[in-house]
Structure formats: structure tokens, C-alpha cells
Length: 467
Ligand SMILES: NC(=O)c1ccc[n+]([C@@H]2O[C@H](COP(=O)([O-])OP(=O)(O)OC[C@H]3O[C@@H](n4cnc5c(N)ncnc54)[C@H](O)[C@@H]3O)[C@@H](O)[C@H]2O)c1
Image 1 (cartoon, rainbow, N blue to C red):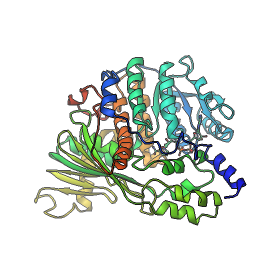
Image 2 (cartoon, helix red, strand yellow; image 1 turned 180 degrees about the vertical axis):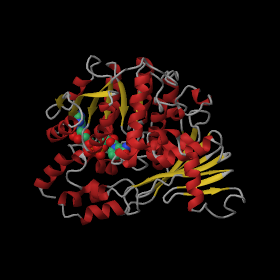
Image 3 (cartoon, rainbow, N blue to C red; image 1 turned 180 degrees about the horizontal axis):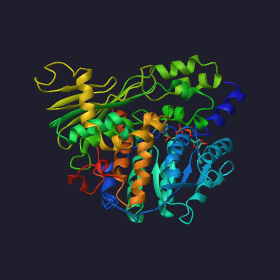
Image 4 (cartoon, helix red, strand yellow; image 1 turned 135 degrees about the vertical axis):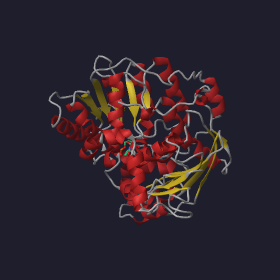
């Protein structure tokens, strides 16, 4: 590689590519021991804070996702449920873009914090005199330090997925939330998708009987975006694929399944086994790129093309969780759920009812049967917000709006949030533990109890609370 290309390569990857600080780090600490010694007390279960009439929102990270999140606040701002009081990014052009968009629906301009010469400038927004909530949509490694600092200063926090990168950071966030009594949640939008909520409602109404098994995934060909010069800031996403081997993006698939299975509300994830395939597709794309910088890293890809993880729950159920952003498979989260009474498959959506009177053996419901169930069991939240959902379809078909609505309205009402710090931490920790299992030759890895035993309390999921 020419010196010129080497320098460009280092700049593109934020200097982290060849440094020991990022290469070869796998979370190998003994998590059971860590979880036992952190003094986690479980006190953020059902935690409700004082109502906030109009939530003052600060947003950090205004790239692809931050832009969508701001759009999702439009209706809530116009209806006086919240106000965007401050925004921060390290790229000036994104601050300008966000300011322009906000001006279309909010008369008062937010404080603009330019982080282009100070990566910690976002800390200026973490002031309870200014804001109630910090929304975090930055690259993964920033989520935990930002959320922790914001809570320590007195703000509630909501991070994009995953909540934390290292398992220890998830435990640290739980402890900080418990000590500061600030909400810290991971905003997992797929938990709010119409189909997932419909399946959840059928589970609640007993259509599935006893649940036994689920299959879920994040299958999304990201090669083009990961190789793009300008899409992800300093190509942060590709960088992770050069550092780790496992499942880095567990939550879109696992989140909804944990809701179906009452995970942390009567059941818990017990242990996992994870296996990665060999790597071929991402390095091929890098090799075939016109950019010598991309050619140069083609041999450094560490993450296998397809990672498959099996998880066992305390009640004996099994979950198959898959991660593939290297191959050309069309987008899929699988969304498969099996019970004694019914089976659901996503992509395309299919429903089997285990009753000869209702569709017969060995066959899915026909279109009419599926539609009848969809109408009968549509989640009340999805029905209530139908109009706003159709106005906000650019947020992944409406689920991003529903997620933001539920967060802001729960803060307005001063009731517990739908998802708590333990949900976000657990789904994120699973990602770190897949690395560990892969590194140990696919051995069983225990998933620690991060709730001080609170998971044993059976409870209806808060997404059924009317807001
Ligand atoms: N839930 C979803 O459907 C969904 C979809 C896309 C991305 N995401 C998540 O959103 C997050 C961001 O992803 P993205 O695709 O928007 O990436 P991106 O690179 O487009 O955006 C990240 C932004 O953070 C900014 N940033 C980086 N360091 C910063 C710092 N110290 N201070 C202030 N700003 C900083 C960057 O300049 C950039 O604008 C990730 O966690 C990703 O997993 C979630």
C-alpha cells in the first residue's frame, strides 16, 4: 500500500484500525462474577419518575438514524408533548441539516452544539436545566459513556441499538440507572412493528398456547453501505467487522422474541452457544472495490458471514438467533414463533393454527384466515395510532414513530417505560457473549442474571399499558 493510501486509511477509520485499542478485543471477563459483584439491586423494574409535561429532548448523533429520530418527534413536538432543546454532532453539515428540518415543525431553535473540534462537546447538553432526556444515535462505542454521563448529570437516556458494546458497560449502565434513578433504555424499534405487536397480542390472548421455540435474525446486506466512503461516520460499521467475530446486532430479532417469551417478566435467558461460518462475502466485496484502501483491508475481516446462536431460556424454551450482513440474502428478521396452539413465520407472513377446524393440518392459514386474525388480534396501540403511523411511514413503516410516541408519552404521564435498563442490557450482553462462545470454539456460555432475581416476577408486558 502506498503511504498516501495508508494515511487515508488511518484517517477514514478514525485512527482506530491498527491500534491495539480496538483490534482483537473480545469480552472475556467472567460475567457471572461481574454481575454478582456489581451490587445490582433490580430497583429499576417498574420505576416511574415524576411526570414531565413537555419533555425537553437533546439529540446526539445526527447521521442516518438521528435524522429519522428527529422526524419521528415532529408530531410529538407539534402536539406539545416534547421540544427539541439541543442537538450535537461532530459534523457541521449534519448540524445544519438537522436545524433545517427542526425549523419546519418547531418555532424555537434548539441549542446547536458543534462537536467538530471536541468529541466531548455533547456533554454541554447534559444539563438538567436544559434537557430531560438525551437521545443517543452515535456509533456503538459512544452509547455507554454518553448514557452514563447523562444519567450522572440528572438526565434520562435512550440509546440506539445496542445499548452498550462491552458486556461490562451494560452492567455499569444498570448500576448507574439504579443509583441515579434515571431511566436508561435502548430504543428497539422492531418491538413496535405492527406484525411483532400482532404476534405478541396473540400470545397474550392464548392463541399460541405454550411457547416452545422461536427463530429471529438480522439479515440485511450492508456491504455497499459499509464500503461507502461517506455513509457511516469514519466507516465505523466496517471497523467492527475487522475487530470481532460474533453477532453484533442482536436486538432487532431478539427484542420482540423476548417480549413474546416474557423474558425478564417470568422467564430469563439462561445460556447460549454461538457459531460463525467462514468469512468470504465481505472480503470479496472489499477485494473487488475500486478503492485501494478497501482492497488493503480485505484480508482483515474477522467476522464470519453468518453467525448462528442458540439460546436456552430458564423455562426450557429455545431461540435461534442469526446475524448476516455480509451476504446478498434479502432482508429478513425471520420472526418465527412456535407454540402448542399456533406457529407464525415472517418474511412472508404466515400463520398456522393447530386446529383441524381452522385451516387443517400441515397448512398455513390462507390469505383470508391470516387477515381475519390480523384484524381480530391487532395490537390496541397500533389500532389507536393508525393515522399517525400512516403519516410517519418513513420511519420503517411506522414502528419508529410508535416507539418514540410510547417513550415520550410514558415520560409525560410519569409511568414506567415499556422497556427498562435490564431489557436493553440483556439483549446487548447476548451480543458480547456470542463473541465469547465463538472465541472458545463454540462452547456454552452462561448468561448472567442481571436483575437480582427480579426476572422471576411474572408481569404483563408494559406495551399493553394504555398511553
Ligand atoms: N433502530 C434502527 O432501525 C437503526 C437504524 C440505523 C442505525 N441504528 C443505530 O443508530 C446508531 C447510528 O447509526 P447511523 O447509521 O446513524 O450512523 P451514522 O454514522 O450515519 O451516524 C452517527 C453520527 O454520530 C456522529 N458522531 C460520532 N461521534 C460523535 C460524538 N462524539 N459526538 C457527537 N456526534 C458524534 C457522527 O458524526 C454521525 O453523524 C447506531 O447505533 C446504529 O446501530 C439503528
